[in-house]
Length: 306
Image 1 (tube, one colour):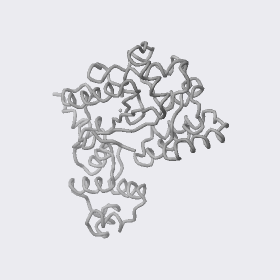
Image 2 (tube, one colour):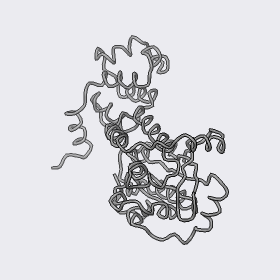
Image 3 (tube, helix red, strand yellow):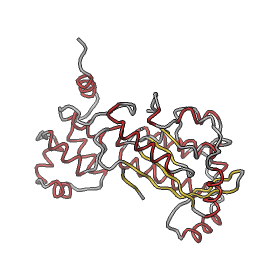
């Protein structure tokens, strides 16, 4: 008789994880908290926390979850902590096509479609493109076909010399912004795949013509937002962006999805997009980025909350 999926996962993880105390200590240090700081936030004694971190005491399941909540550890990593402590994972990781996520898929599709004629995309924790609206393909003209084959990594596509980089007018500023976001994400998640992605992106050619463009944009946008400016056949299109996440997810897949919505940063861009809206031609990317509610093969993942 085949073992349940959860028990197989549990046994496999037991062969990989390290002692839970050491993992808790690493997360605490990553958050730059002292034992006393975390103990106060968790309303436990610093002595008890020290015993948990050194292995002199074993945490209960509730204590693992309580400390993970205080440390704002991602759901995926909370499962790892639970397994390390000898407990079963409690946060499911479903495929995006799972019926249980139907309402979430519908919400994402509504946001993407409702944002047209402005571009919007859905990405997972590794910046893999999961879905996009009809305003996105025209912006990808000129990118190498290999970079548009699923799974599409949005950061690689944006900064690769054969991707969108040659058509981003303010590439030095936008590159710096994206790498800063990725670095922040690595600090929060400690995800090794993101570390490798950072290493790859950092090796791409570094643009040098930053000075006058950045100073002009600081005057135009008041130094409060970082726009991205695409050079297109219709002229230079300027965007500012927002990130939308689900506010109370208890599913790993859902917790790692984010929507990036781009808004026109000036009147000329808004007018151009309204004119282009509704007559966007399909691109090589279109087949791999259907709305999530229609997808049959999901890709492997200022804030607004859904």
